[in-house]
Image (cartoon, rainbow, N blue to C red; front, side):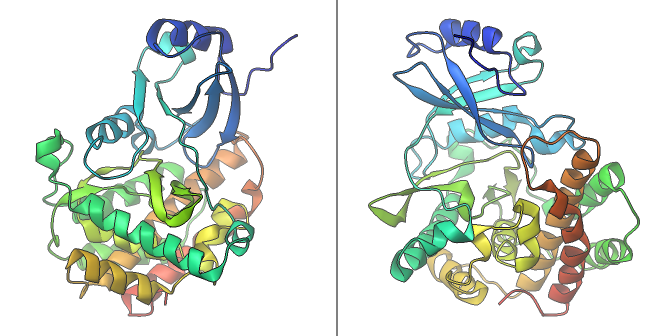
Length: 344
């Protein structure tokens, strides 16, 4: 029987790699695409007895620094045993002769992933609330990790992080932009002029939303694993919080194809989530407006990159035709956030 090879993989080469580098593998592996195209492509790999998750960069990626497999693997590996829930790391391959791109392998984690509004609607209100607050608690726990003690002292430069973020995403826009948008330029100018002093330094996830967490089926308030660490860095923890809150704005929903769990009206409000974070972490949120606006700017640029890949026929999966329309809305929402009108 012929086994179909998912787009983006070379199954024969992958089998050789697993046989040589993954001690638990007990036979030829097969693979299937779990989800892909918007960020790193994610596959479920199995030998019939064990399961792993393989991640590789998207096809035709235009923003290479956002898909650095080595960084994603390194931070996940460093966080083992810290109390931050992450998958067990298995292997990192930077030999381009295998798949043509670097890729990482981690153990598969069983659990519940809330990807869509419909997924959220299937659970009782109290469980949904526990899931949302549990994720904020996990974010606060990540930000409390003494990163130098777990080998991440050289993972980035926390000083000047916010300024670099503003400029980085402006530079990314010049790479991926398919049109001129006045609000993007205005938002960049205002962010650059209003950068505050960093609130603190910590490991930041860089993309934490509800569907990037695997939850315990018996208690949705318990996070079994935080995943998708491709944009992790050392930086200002409030940038993580701001982005997490922005993901609750309905303007974001088209970026995920029209039904995003993070925008469900059954979740606690942005204000309630921010208050929970402040209570758990003890951090001051007086400049939250800036961090929200930075989050909108970042998502808008990422969405434009996805839109650009879609126009070039380089996306894998469905639901990409809605992404481009989200970019102007996100930019406008960023300007509103700077004026004190962020998500509530």
